[in-house]
Amino acid sequence: MKRIKDYLSGLFGNLFGGVSRVTYVRDEKGNLVEPTATPAQQYARPTASPTASPTPTPTPRTEYSPTPAGEYQHQIPYQMDDNKRRMVKPDLAQLLMKVFDPIGAATESASVLAHPRERTMLPQEEAQYNQGRPYISGGENRSFKTGREVDIPNNDGSIDRGLFRINSNTFDGWMSNPKSRERLAEYGITDWDDMLDPEKNMVFARLLMESTSTQYEGDRSWRKWWAAPLLARHPSLKHELAKSE
Image (cartoon, rainbow, N blue to C red; front, top):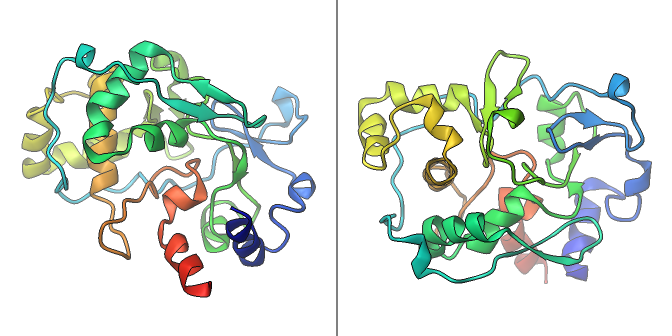
């Protein structure tokens, strides 16, 4: 872990040694705010969204086959800023296991939603999407909420919805493609409101993640989720670390 921090510190400058110098953090609703900011001091989310453009037809590496959630009786851990081990509440844990465990990504999927705050964008992404400001986040949905109360409007008029914050433009892009629309229908996903259903939201998230290109075969990337851990968004960094050893 120290080698990873040393490598990323070199990539970002003084990332791990000087986080306290960073001005902006992301709150539970996804807004950029100062660490001690009042609501009036909040900053809007970045003006562009990596999930806003239509996505090619997904080609999952491992087939998702719905099975009774009760078959799984596992706990899924996650961490917050204090690094204490917490457990995803049982109903969501069962669904995460159902959807993501077939590809060995149940715990990883939980870390996308909640993790200790870190810088989750590469410098070039910050320059393009966040006006060059450091982007610090602790997960896409730290409260693990699934309802309309966490519908987040973006500057482009789109909405991020549900557990995995699915973007409405992304959803529309998939629905406009006959092949991907047919693929979603196989899982009962036919309408934007389906993203309020936690399981269907997870299924869409998995298909979106698996459709994301990676530099190395066998990797999976959560790059479409800005607030996911940096190494989950850019798994190629792990390979760069290995080369540097």
